[in-house]
Length: 134
Ligand code: 9YT
Image (cartoon, rainbow, N blue to C red; front, side, top):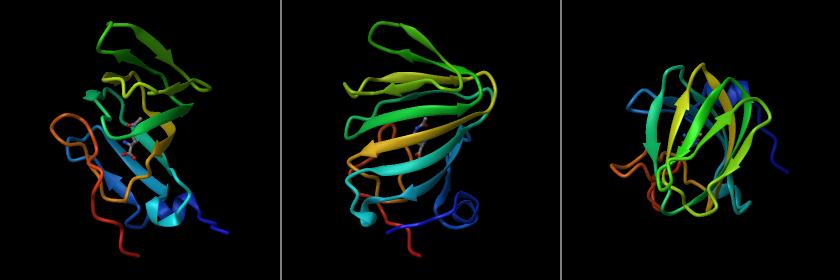
């Protein structure tokens, strides 16, 4: 059994802050937990507007709080995000995420993240990355 606490984890090296200043994320479950996915609670800062393209991962995101939108790059479609919205990047969809106010999101990645990933130049996470050292 694995039991963790978001507040405690956010005060540890499980919290990653984006170098570009768009988000911060507390990575509650990682590859080393052997669940087959990773699970994160992510804050997207108000006014964030940035591109991502998870070429190596499938991601599902559930909005807990805040308002924003996601635009799929291939067709320019925009989808509103508000509490209760879930989106799944089932086709590794390239996308733009915009936060009209601060958003709190629960994110799941398959395969799981190692721990220290930040976006590369294409807005993807590499498959290999440093793990967190407890
Ligand atoms: C919504 C979103 O940014 N998902 C990506 C996960 C988060 N940035 C993280 O933990 O890296």
